[in-house]
Length: 140
Image (cartoon, rainbow, N blue to C red; front, side, top):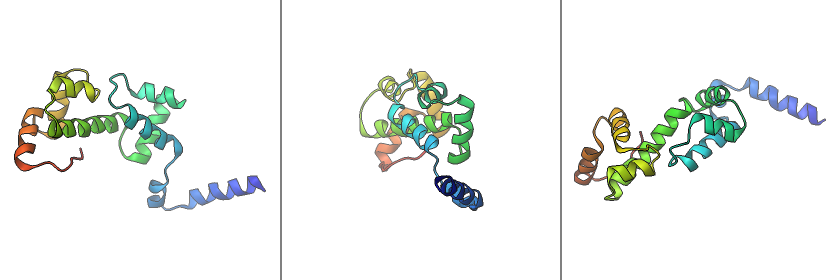
């Protein structure tokens, strides 16, 4: 009976439309997102550390994460770090070195390069613009 229920659930999943499949969150991907969101501030957080923490290979985690989230876990982590950095830039007077460390970037030079690549403006200029224009929230 239990095997029949599991088989029915599996077949039901196979019959889902593509849109329904995208909304179906597998535990591995949710666990990976939670791990990254809890640990984004640690520079040593990588795809390898996330995979080890979850007990899967890097390639499996990357493949499943990308399939269900739409972007690789490393890019998701970078965006998460940048969103937190943008909050700190707008809501505090912390220096760039401190913000870079608190968001897991390690040093201000690397942080500045990544920030400019995604935001199309230097962190200091972003802070100035946010003060003038106001800041609500940012999604990278």
